[in-house]
Image (cartoon, rainbow over all chains, first blue to last red; front, side, top):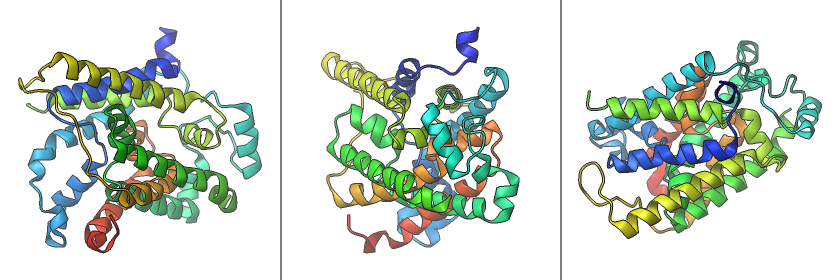
Length: 185
Length: 137
């Protein structure tokens, strides 16, 4: 059972993620997680402010079912099929993060320095989560897709727009991780 | 109950992304520092498997569950929206270490503060809908 309880290697995980896309395409849908953000805006009444949100959200309700499943899947994975969640990071990454002020790098899925109660109420974590969320939500709709729609589905169906979007993901990601994060921490 | 299969696919997706560590903030950091092959391996093998699927379904005219030809997802032509929008997305992805799928999954793992990012991502999506006609696409 250890091979299930331990983290799964990339060569198992990658094809399984593709299987999620294959199943959705087989059932006549697409693999696109960020579309749910738009659907939720529609459900919350955003259609009153922009025609962009005037869509029949019921046609997208299958995707909301995927979201609910994903939440349940996250719960199942950490509570029933993991023995410990320590991420086997590059030692260089760990020492680098320590120098930036991140303790226990890899001991949890997300750093306490951003996500725990104290960081959030101190204002810093809160601000980072707000800004990060805004960038993700705005950027993904502007780029018409996220990692699932562009990087996985778009690249595997050889779409040039998706290649451009993924290059964009990396431009932004490299700037944030290499230039901005060291300034914030 | 017609959505049951999608709920199950979502559960599978959530489990795979946790077990692959793709929902780990640290893995995203490591990826953008080029200090590990892990994330590149995941994305690379996912894309290769996906390519194989689309190739086979094109050649063999497989039908989907609705007995229609396999639908090839397509995106509109363009450059600006993809490069600018993508870069904005990348900044956020690397900052909070989560893209839209992992946001929900992390909530399930017990990272409740991710709700702040989810709420904020909704606001971001809403803002795009408001200003989109003024942006270059």
